Length: 147
Image 1 (cartoon, rainbow, N blue to C red):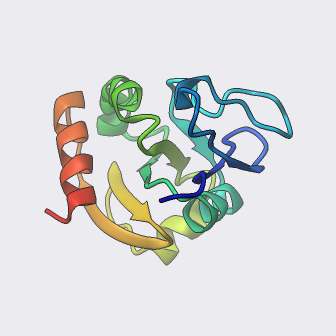
Image 2: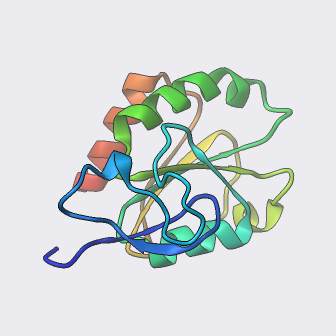
């Protein structure tokens, strides 16, 4: 991509051009001035999910989870670890399906945790079940390559 890629701020939803002359990990939002990548999965609601997958040039990996889900809670530290490895090449986010059930229903999610990788507004792949950090990273990178 020759022009600076667009990235959606996980804090305010502002769309930013990611500078190509500076490390992406140091980028800050032009609207709210918070870090665009902070090493933690972004917490999304339905509108935030739609904005991330429709406006960002980056792939968006989303963990659909719920607070009552034992495997989701067990996977949370591994997902956070995977986030530190995958960002800033992709946005890593979480959506609580108990608090925000509509996106999960619309996407046909039947079990959690479910990971879905989106890029340029479309789903590239999905997998369900708890994984360790290495498996999450490998799956996300493979899904991005189409494998």
